[in-house]
Image (cartoon, rainbow, N blue to C red; front, top):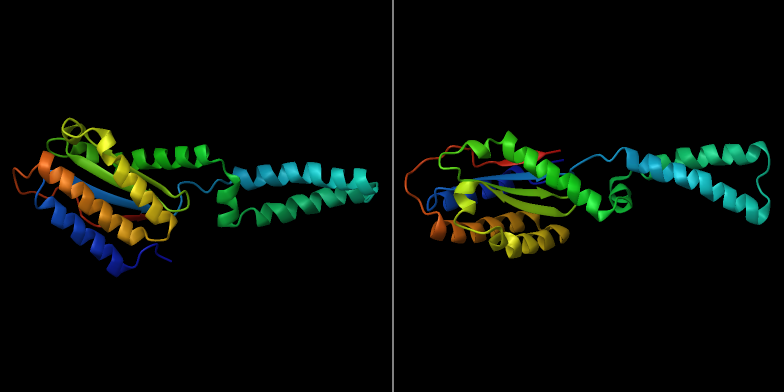
Length: 205
């Protein structure tokens, strides 16, 4: 299922087009369902639980004994490996620093993959969101950063992050694009009409 419907994606594209009418900046938006599948995380937690939990139960109650303890460990590992694969549980098991590190890496890869580093005047701008991690980042090329310090985007990112956490991803995109447009039109105004990159919202599964 798409993170945003086609109609909602068109709203984002129209908002980008509106902003680009008054700035040389080239905006690209990317929405990822998650930054990583974190395959090793459920296995790690299931392994630790299978080692500790049956042993603790055996120590406190004496059950199970012998081969039963080994079978209990296997069953615990298998069951928890499957349970911990549920997306919401997996996300909760991952340290916040790890989630944000993975999301930040994906954002930087997308900046390059979307060719934002090759725009005329180095005025590429990426608005990146990873929903599972509730992570938002704005990346800009030097043609924008020389006019606008990165701290300019902090409050915009913070507000957008709150909206993602509240399930208001579409409204977050629209508000973020508009807020960025205010800064860009003032500091990186339009000097020539062009549209080097597509305005569509890039969706990552």
